[in-house]
Image (cartoon, rainbow, N blue to C red):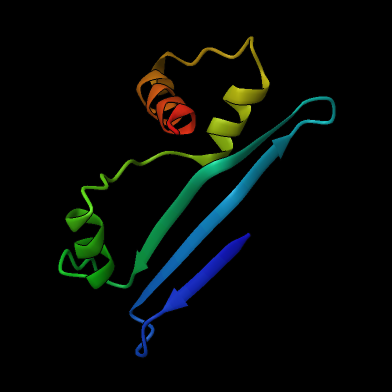
Amino acid sequence: MRITLTDNNFNERLTIDTDLSVLNGTTSKIFDQLVISEIKQKKYNPKSAFIQILRDLNIQEMRFSKYCMGVLHLNDNVKYNRFKPRLLKINKILTQT
């Protein structure tokens, strides 16, 4: 599911993705414990209310490609050294209760 929020002037847009799933025809993976939020701004503003809320909650920014993460979770034979730190962090998030 995707939720999109925007400010009144359309200078900032926030998308929140939940219940992500990936499939390749034979294999599927559901990320039901993962929430991905993304801020899109016309001009970068570190004083954004959403950025400040995330900082107050000690939620750290992490850049990654949802496509690449899907490929890595579905294919065991793909080299993932470049993405290993991100993959480990996501797996840690997914295994927390």
